[in-house]
Image (cartoon, rainbow, N blue to C red; front, side, top):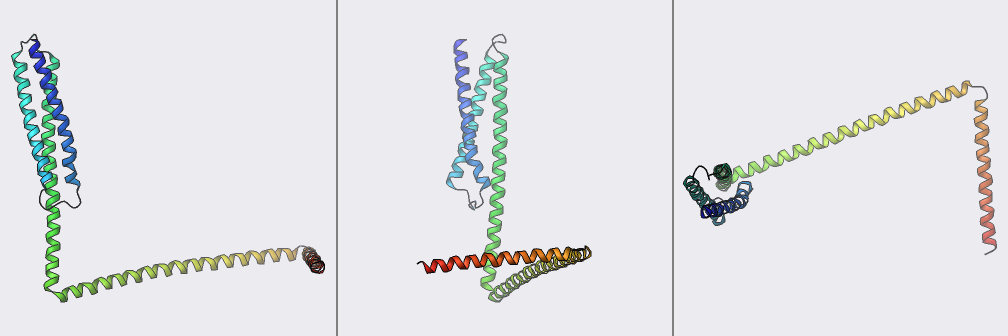
Length: 226
């Protein structure tokens, strides 16, 4: 019974190790499904990774078969529910990995077919242009016309924005002028306000004259004592 238990533990350890290797290979293999410039034909590395995945899946299937036979050889009393659950879990993971491999292969095939189709279309276009120089020149002129139209559209958009800004400034000037007229009109209606504003302006001018004279005097004294 101990040898049976030891064999079960050893086989389970191998199964878990192969499951980990499968996950690692999936990480490498899935990169081909997300390549932007996938080769037209599978590379040696891609073929080697796919072959390794197929080989590991077969080894895992053989290990599960051995685990099944080992569990069937045990009596009902010694066969635990834990072993049954472990075996079912290994089968479930194997099925998931088989489905994942099929999905990745299909995705890689679709990506490669689309890349090859685009490559063929570009090749056909290049061949057509080489055999029809006039068509190439006409296409070039159409491209130039589209670029010029785009430039005109952009210029019209910029001019429209400039006109809108200018109109906004005009409205703001009119608003400020209206406010100024209202203030002047209100000030003229208040008795003595114009006289007060005049005195304030005269005081500012007088202070400016005094300050200017003082600065000139200091400058002359500086020149005199140099």
